Image (cartoon, rainbow, N blue to C red; front, side, top):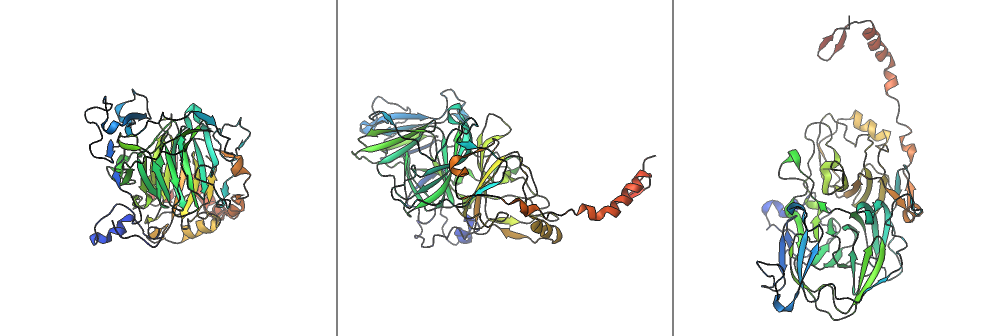
Amino acid sequence: MPAQTTDPKEYQNIFHWAETQQDGAVPSFALRKNDPYEYQAGFGNHFESEAIPGTIPHGQNSPRCVRFGLYAEQMTSSAFVAPRASNKRSWLYRVRPAVAHEGFTDLPDLEDTESNFLLINPRVHISPTQLAWRPFDVPSEAGVDFISGLKTVAGSGEPTIREGIATHVYLANTNMSQKAFVNSDGDFLIVPQQGSLDIQTEFGPLFVQPGEICVIQRGQRFRVDLPDGPSRGYILEIWGANFDLPELGPLGANGLANARDFLHPKAKYEVRKERWEIVYKLGGKFFKSMQGHSPFDVVAWHGNYVPFKYDLTKFVNVGSISVDHIDPSIFCILTAKSRDPTAPLADFLIFSPRWDVASHTYRPPYYHRNVASELMGLIYGEYGGRSDSFMPGSVSFECGNVPHGVAYEQFKAASENPPPAMQISQGAIAFMFESCRPFTITDYAWKSSKRHEHEPKMWDNLVDNFSSHEKEIEEILSKAAKGLAIENGHGILSGSA
């Protein structure tokens, strides 16, 4: 493995992961220098891993006796009869099965989390106003781990009806010591923004740094350590679906997030006979069970229902090389299906360094009213088109069909000056959680001192350029009304008889 990095911004400052290969001058490598673990590459594959060679039974999943006296345990995410292409399950061979625990007890609600986003819930709010939040502070009081530091910002639906979405931030300053978490509601897509996460899963460890993401799926146990100290980041939680790669359509076989760049853990077990607390989230409520052994005692496993991570600097941007913008779906890394086959439950998109080269084209984002709800965050760097308050760790929200776009100064400059071919978003990665569903805002976010509104006055000086052409327009309309010939760029148009 390459030498350890001493510059935490080393990968922030590259234009794309390809730069690390130095045009073939160094041996290619798939991992960041300070990642201590090994992984398996691919997306949607059937993987297998064993910490002790020869553990996994072949030709069957559940033999009468598993080697070393291990227990076979199946974990599923789909109905038993789901079509083969969408059937997700894994077999784990472990020291003790997950059923070996002491029963469940209720835990108090986490005050700042929410799971019911229906308007009958008085703790959520809806508004067409474009909202934003300055970076949320990591708590100064000790003892706030990844789970106790969860704060919900917005969402839609409710987990027990098996379709919906929640967006959270996490603000943590301590490791999860002898404590594991299980989300029985849905999948977590975790986006670190400040500080790395050392995540122990039943399938093995994942090391996830700012500029990377990971997905821990429904029902999978994990714990989080903070090797860099206090940490902050974002979470997209989905209910009733799993994340998948978007279809490439006319792009063909390659581009966007390539399947080979997704990394899955290798088996690594521990046998620790000590008290462990397992926290369960179910229907947005929290429960715990105690057990006298580590939940991370899986010696071997195989299957296609496995947590994974992805390095955002490996994303292969595509775009226009002639005129006009391609729709922002070209920035989609992962998508999750809804019950509407034409609209996703959730998309995860990023806006990372890339070239902007379209000719005769208005370069800033065009004025638009999208049907989708959009919640944006910034991992690092500066993102154009947002206010000065949009800093790393911030949140920006726009609900569906609300108009947005740049101020007049940017419109004027982009309209008057032919733009050069240029690199944009250098040293920056912003992301978007997007959904076809309308979001409601939680009490935590609604009442937060970090909340502010996009200032509508920024559009007050969008001048009426059209009226300055009044005389020219009157002449054209007068000729048209009289049936006179009207010149256009290709010759003469005859008026109507």
